[in-house]
Structures are given as C-alpha cells and as structure tokens.
Length: 151
Image: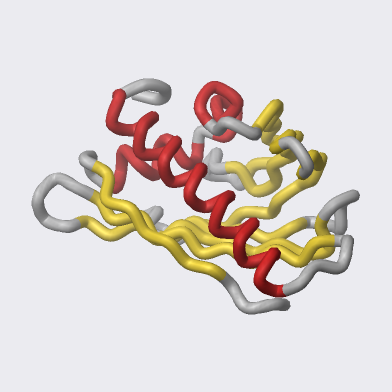
C-alpha cells in the first residue's frame, strides 16, 4: 500500500460526542458533502457497523464502495479498509484517532491511504487525499460543534 497522509483538527466537544457522529454512518449524507448514500450492511454484536456501503460523488471522483470497520474498545480509534476493489479504488485504508485534550476538546487525527484504479502520480494521489481529509475534518467539526445528529 502506498504511504498514507495524515491531518488533525481540534473539535470543541468531548471525544465521545465526536465518536458518536463518526459512527452514525446513515446520517453522513446530511453533513459529508460528497456522500450521496451510506448504508450499514452488517453490524457487530455490539451494534457498531462492521461493513458500510458508500455512494460518493465528488465531481471527477464518483464511486460506490464498501468499507470494513474495526474499533478500539473505548472508540479512541476507528479504522477501516476497502472490502473489495471498486470502480475507482484498488485499496483504501484509514483511521480516526481521537484524543481528549483535558479542556473539553478532542483532537481528531485522520490518516488515509488510497490506491486508485487509474494510474496517478504520487503527488496527485497525496493532493487528493489531502482534499478528502480537509473536507471530511471540516464537515465533521461543523456537524459535532453544531450539536446536530445523534444526541
């Protein structure tokens, strides 16, 4: 797998609230700009999603794919990998790492590695990863801080 990109943001909410929003996949189309549909297709016994199908449309990058999720027991780490190659992606791995800052805020570190089905130069792949992470973190922060979604 190609090297990954990493980005962080501080959100004015406890990490438990951030984890609730991240794990509420069915509501992603309400706040994640490129996500047109997100469907939990399989859950673990504890009710957390194990497989989620996404339909995304980010202009030039439109895709339909399934991610397989795993979680740290305390939800301080949520990670995923592409279940099978899709039309646009050969591989995808990623994670959110959540760290309490002791002041009511949570630092979210997003790590992402994507291998596209079409050949791209490494610098273009990293730029695409950065754009995906920028948008995801910005929208996650807005959603959590607005207090919308899962109570």
